[in-house]
Amino acid sequence: MNQSNTNGNEYFVIKAKDNGVHVIGLTRGQDTRFHHTEKLDKGEVMIAQFTEHTSAVKVRGKALIITKYGTVDTEE
Image 1 (cartoon, rainbow, N blue to C red):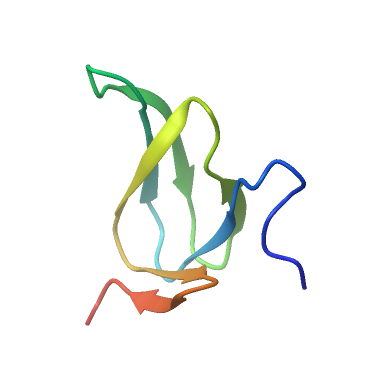
Image 2: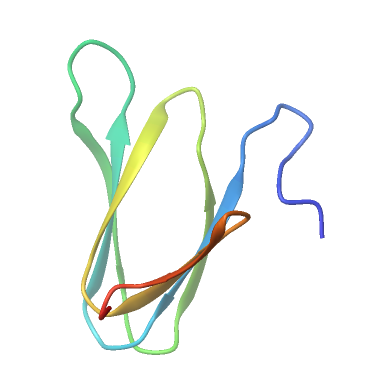
């Protein structure tokens, strides 16, 4: 599977292991701010990507985060 689009923005997957996992997108630029929030319930999967507006993502709760660099389990 190609893990980046034609613009070079990488995709990543977040799979909720519990209800109420928060996924928070943070902006690029001099002032980093929250610009998008999603709430996932157990078993839900979100496929997202970094963009010209999103430079970081914060995940709060029990989840698996899968990137081309590997998998992170928030419980570890």
